Image: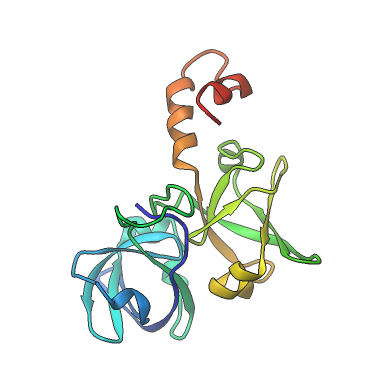
Length: 210
């Protein structure tokens, strides 16, 4: 379980492939402090397991099932990535509940600069749009963000200066892929009420606290 608050930007040190498994070695500093073999680390929003580490880097494996739903197999040496350790039971909960289970890879379709933020437009599939609500939470490349504008086929996020400084989202360009994970709580509500004839309505969302 993660919060979507990126702790550190790491750098891909080495990429190797063996028997359809992609091995990533990532240079970093902060998250090595209390690392153990078997720890869960969010890499651009994808939950991966630490298989090896030293005082400069750690290694994870991207198996076929994960590779098919992410763009991690496209990462090259020297590429920067968002990193977050699994949520601590004693820490502050600053983002929202993030599982690290990417729903799909979407594309950035537009980037605009405003007075105090950068507006990024992302186009996911219709099924993902249907799991989103205006002003709701969304995870983009492991970053907990707010859906500022929701349309029929696209949505906007605003990147404030701190987000641009502390994540890789400021490096993104039009056409780049991003990992999308919709709000876990919304999925549970949708599952509970989705079998009824009327499906998910604003009234039902309100009743469940949304």
